[in-house]
Length: 152
Image 1 (cartoon, rainbow, N blue to C red):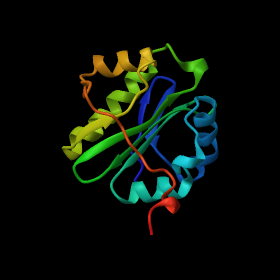
Image 2: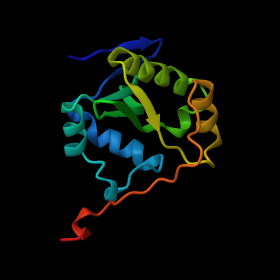
Image 3: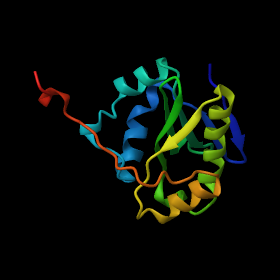
Image 4: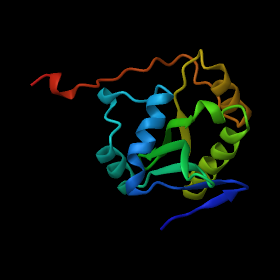
């Protein structure tokens, strides 16, 4: 089912199978592409089957993907990933529109929402705090990206 919302000349809709090449290009332009993280079509498909959602912000005239918000769900929390807007569309209030749609999804399923943001990304930190996100002070983030190197 495709849940779509329009905002003048914009459309916020669910991810479609053919969107991946354009989305990957957006993530590349906004420095969110990193093959080590496994941000590929197969991972997107798997997270959607587990109850996640990938919202696509599209310009109606050109049907160009201009923004994304990928939300994964672990049964307890939504993790917000890859919240991105093409640089030429930034500063126009689109991030607020897209974030409101993300938070509606979180509210619908009754889940907490969590995200990671670089502390030097002042615009993003400002956006998230305006929407009620609180900094979890005192936490360090640890990750193993290459599981093939785990102990046998």
